[in-house]
Image 1 (cartoon, one colour):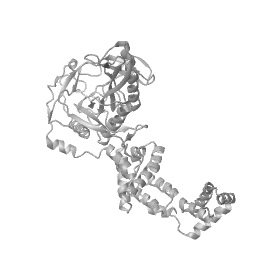
Image 2: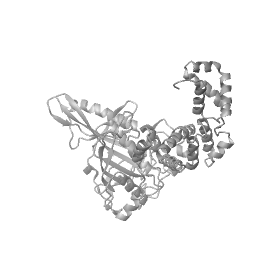
Image 3: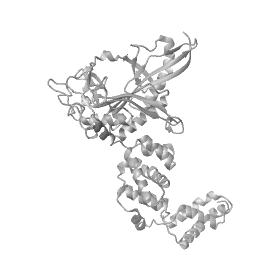
Image 4: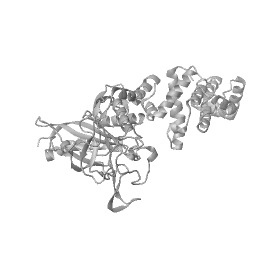
Length: 517
């Protein structure tokens, strides 16, 4: 067998997104992917339609259709005027009907595309490099299956398999890309972008640990052999990955394993050659599950109980009018307009309510007379440093602190005008977390945090600091400028927050006649 001399990776991605509608896609039973029904007991979110009892009929959830269209529009998809529902026949114990209502030849969304930037060394988008176009073949709506449990309730081994039908019938949007990815990093970057997009639109809660989004990469390799031939390995679909770490690991593993597998089995891509594999996160390997069915094996045919859906231009345009500015566009704008690092901008756009709060704070600072570019930098520092510190301490997201943009903007302006110091910002922010509607100007006055402009008071504080730390005074005069920190700290202690640290440092160095400060 000739040796493999070069390898080119090809990956297409299937993404299953559980939509956060209140009820299921074809019944009025509560939807476990909606936050109101999270944590429900096993088999409590069911009805006759979910259980496929005789005489029960499906009724389509309009909200699920609209959220699917919204995601499709965000991905640049065409929304056909007519779409229909099909029965996809296969038997699983957690699929009561022994078929799944899905879409085959007329999906809700099709023929889209997104321009994906390259990933930098840390996995963030690098907007300085050319983008790669990722084609979206389709996004179709279907119902999810239930869940099989192979452990006893509470953990431990079980000699039976239990089934929970709560998830059965959950609206599931399946997004399918073309095999346009050529690196594991680009797949993960797209997956992160897609999750952010779906959550910005309110389509899904997107909690990976709860299975709200599941990734299934279709991976194969183009190989160049030592005899000059080119061959393509069979596609391997890795099922049900619910973390970015697992997605990256599975693709990395297959990219290394498939070139080694080909000399052993000689199998190349063709009909009936596709296989599905699972991912063992502990061992870091994929493992075989089954041969993959082709479309004809599912015996698709139009569902006789559901009429086609007609999406006219008016309905589509009303949905399109609700599209927010995409997270990726915000990310790029924050970097370019406010001179933020990509990691800082990514932290601000990760949650839409946090990004919306950031935008509102900027508007408040601009209204106070600060130019927008500077306002963005100030607002970013306030949220990234103060707000995220308090959010981390409480184990919540920034928007869950209940902060209001008006008082935050006022606080930022106080600091920008030099009327309070950094210590004052810390103290006032802590109060705003407890009293979001408090007025920072009034608080600063009552708490004695306004910086004193009295030169006499400044001189007195500095002289007291010199007297308390004569050695530091000598060190600074001898050119050891770093020794000024102790003196600044002593002044700030005397001032009780009523002095600005930078102004104090400058004044101390002036008094000690340090050159080149």
